[in-house]
Image 1 (cartoon, rainbow, N blue to C red):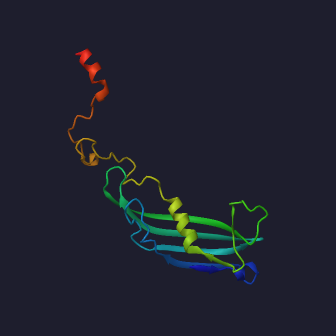
Image 2: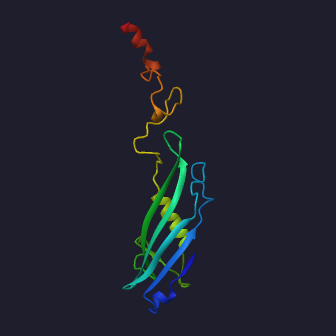
Image 3: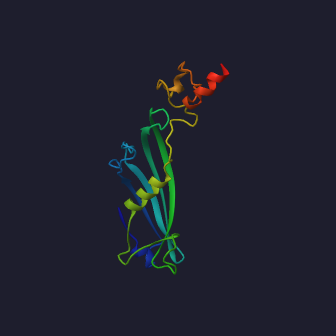
Length: 165
């Protein structure tokens, strides 16, 4: 969605609300396509002194395998974002502002896509205390113990174990 900000920068209006659906269903992450529904985005751009304040809220369902036990997991996320938009800044290297070019249009799809991908957790777990899989037999340890002897001696230390025996 392209947001036309000209009326805000010229002072014709004080606020521009927006509401749209962002489709990230073709975004691949770690071999899966986790965005199972369109992302609902609501927000507004409003006049704030010499700048424009952009605030948005994105809600969506996210489905991916757990990074520890590989169980399919679905979670609902809601993130809030805010950005300060300006026509010009004194320091070009300042990341606190998003510069709007002479067309006065801002691509909200690309901006919010980046925000959402940066906000997602690096490690996706089915639950905080996920026990993962047994390294020997591969059983999901969340379902109970597997019975494997998990206390294995490092093969490099086998020689020392023979000395003790």
